[in-house]
Image (cartoon, rainbow, N blue to C red; front, side):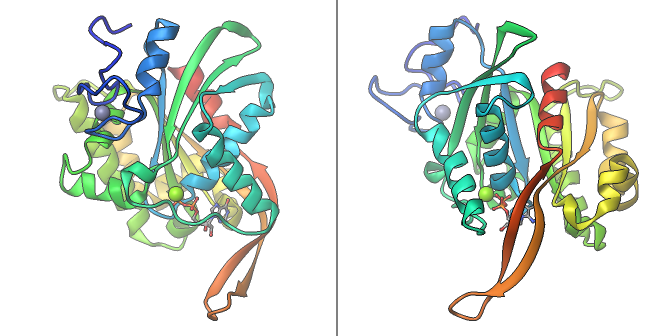
Length: 289
Ligand SMILES: Nc1nc2c(ncn2[C@@H]2O[C@H](COP(=O)(O)OP(=O)(O)O)[C@@H](O)[C@H]2O)c(=O)[nH]1
Ligand SMILES: [Mg+2]
Ligand SMILES: [Zn+2]
């Protein structure tokens, strides 16, 4: 428990706020984080989900939260506040209607902060406090290019006990270098935040999740080989600067069709959901933290 944290101090950026504030005035993180931390008497165990725009963060996160709240893998999840349920509800109701949810807005105050306390049957007394803001990829990209444009991202990564880095495997498999460069930049940002001397490696566990792996079976078969081949810059940085990185493949969708909307734009239609590899990165992070 952080000795100095008071009820009006934001857990993410440590700025002071009025007594009745719901969101931090500086970084817009929910003040429930602070209140819960004080009530539970311990530092929350923050897991953040980051990745470029359109890699599948919202869909993955919504599905993971839903699985946890249905006690998949013998986990128990207690959502903190209705906002934590909104994200999972949006994703599940869209997929049931064969649609993908709309894009996450760039404005920080419109992000869904999912906050659940999770424990496992094996050790029912140990609770993990999982804080997962569903960030817009553009905001992360802006912060990487111009540090401190989004204070909340820096604060969050500094306080994260574990990080899930989501990558669009379908894009990487097609030889698009954007996927590799974004992940490369992000890992280098995390490395810089850690501020370690050369030779020391970053200890924070990082689960690299290859999303949309339904589009490229080779990612499912050998995630590590896939990363070494298609995301080579990322792989080299992980090897030289990070102590604790693991690679996973995930997919939410069984099969996809293409249709058009009323304006004749092509839209992807998720025909049915067939989750694969959703829980595994999360389970690994909890054991690695
Ligand atoms: N094939 C496939 N496409 C997906 C999957 N998850 C998401 N997508 C596609 O990726 C798009 C962006 O997903 P979203 O979760 O909104 O990405 P975000 O911007 O990172 O939050 C969706 O509109 C889908 O077209 C998946 O598991 N498989
Ligand atoms: Mg999103
Ligand atoms: Zn704040």
